[in-house]
Image 1 (cartoon, rainbow, N blue to C red):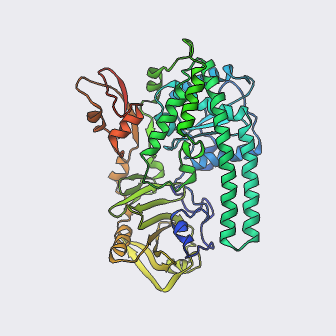
Image 2: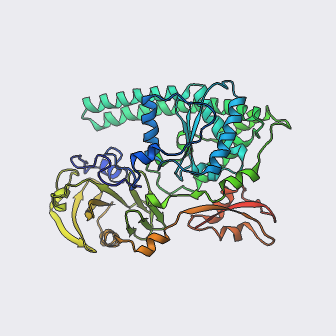
Image 3: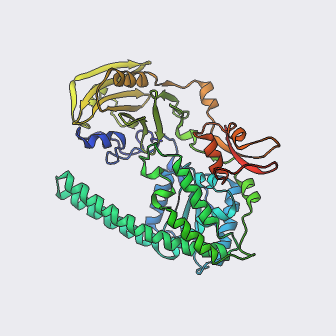
Length: 499
């Protein structure tokens, strides 16, 4: 999900150290410039993105407006779905009326992201991704997320977090400016992050208590929170072994820790509100609202299918080596080989048209480059250049390729330079090509389809109908809130993923 060149500051002029830290830099490049998604969303379109608006007005501030635009940019803009917007508006109205501050205004934005995430700004702006909406199984589960985020606003957690983040940024900047000792800088950052994470956990437990109470008083099933926390843990477990290198693409659990203790706590709180009036799940209405929702990555921002990355709007594709897992993050496409001995990064950089690609590779953006290794190439008709770089523990092969007005960069890292690692890098770069018109037209997003279980259907047979997902049987169970031994019954309504 890298952003097209020219839309944000590129990496030209930045330096990467070809030391052990370069392993992290080459894979995450978190401090290497802001290279957002490879997308073509204009600021005007983003600003006009649809939002879910209850019958109240959120008081915007210049800071909150800037943060709103940043969030939209980071999460692929807003997701336009009138059915979902209407459902969420009704849920929020009920929650607000049942809260201790019915005068507090909220505005909910559905984000066009497959990540499972939700968060709030101090002003009452709430955000929920379509990935989270797709994972939830009924209105009570979604209401538990929305009431939890409302609780952060009511308890002023969002304001406190904003202040903490501002202070952390100041500390980081002072330490970075005053110290050339990387160990000291890392220690200061680690301490800052640890303090914020510890404080966050306290906030989450408090928000759980407030949120469950609000949902129960609005007559939603209070156990929706514990069920959804469980679903998120199970969903996160399916990602074990995959990279989670993009902070903005991380799931809800990254900033909202869901431990067994937290789930048990949510269940304990729910028992205080158990009553015939507080048990609404309304699964049928919920499933009707999410039927046909986009699932996973939106092809307009580029997407991964197995070892292949495709970007229909920008018109190119490439294929990663065998045994590599690709992850499309906000800054780059990241690939890691099973076992972690090799990795790759694909991103876009700004290179002046008059600068040769060989000169760019030797321009100092990366230390340890062997200038004598620089070679001009032609890859499938595109001008390109390659170079070798060395670190203390890793060896790098870097390619720059000019595609239209953009320059794309492949960075391959291997713990040891071998014939295989060289071949993997070369074959991956040589697979970069234009998409055909037929491929562009066929690039459709995956969607959630709600179907009726028929006689003879089983979890296994239904999961075999799932398209484009890993661990289809486990994924089917998680999407439908089924534990490891649960079975489906005829006439049950279930979610499957289709293309």
